[in-house]
Image 1 (cartoon, rainbow, N blue to C red):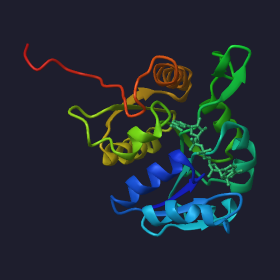
Image 2: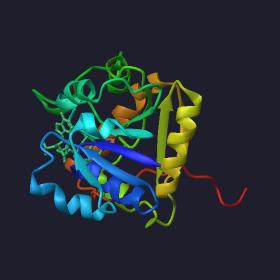
Image 3: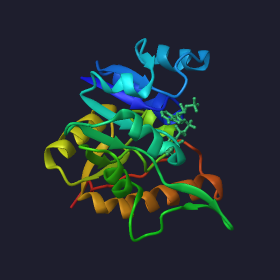
Image 4: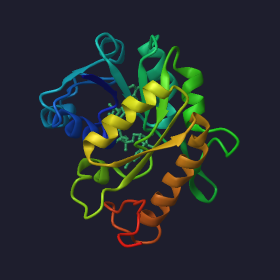
Length: 214
Ligand SMILES: NC(=O)c1ccc[n+]([C@@H]2O[C@H](COP(=O)([O-])OP(=O)(O)OC[C@H]3O[C@@H](n4cnc5c(N)ncnc54)[C@H](OP(=O)(O)O)[C@@H]3O)[C@@H](O)[C@H]2O)c1
């Protein structure tokens, strides 16, 4: 498939590399495509095209949102109408508050729902936000596949998102409608707290396990 990834940073780089390795063609949409800093990430993602966001919109089958939260409105406006396409929202609505990093939208809405309000014509699925980019880069390197939940209202779009997530090597799980982003974004905060405050390595991931014996 043709995947457009908006943002070529830590997350965009890891996802582009992973999906290029599974045969998908990657285009990055970024604010300054001529900047040589993108060359290595593009090279790691199967010689991905690096272009502006509007151009990345043209041929994409699926779009992945991997920009800082503050950049989301600008990136989505530049993309234009999604025409019913799947938009995987990997962002977290982070901000620095008085006590440090926090979710900037409270708990009665979510970044995923806000993205759905901004992304005209998009079938938004919240996923790939729950763990750090080091996990996204190599989810197959675990004794048990790390879990990755997906939340969205369009069942066909969510099925496709789950397929793409599973291709990377995750234990891909349907978490329900898009408003479940209200749980998946705090789950990301839990992961961030483990890594930033409690000394967990950045490659630590969540697992959802079954017993091996009854
Ligand atoms: N880092 C993680 O482990 C992690 C894990 C899960 C979720 N997330 C979430 O994923 C998102 C990206 O995180 P990250 O760590 O990858 O950030 P990052 O390394 O700072 O990369 C952000 C990318 O977005 C680009 N960008 C900025 N404004 C843009 C715009 N208007 N249109 C298109 N691209 C734009 C940046 O380009 P320039 O560099 O040229 O500005 C950069 O390539 C955040 O919302 C974050 O909360 C991060």
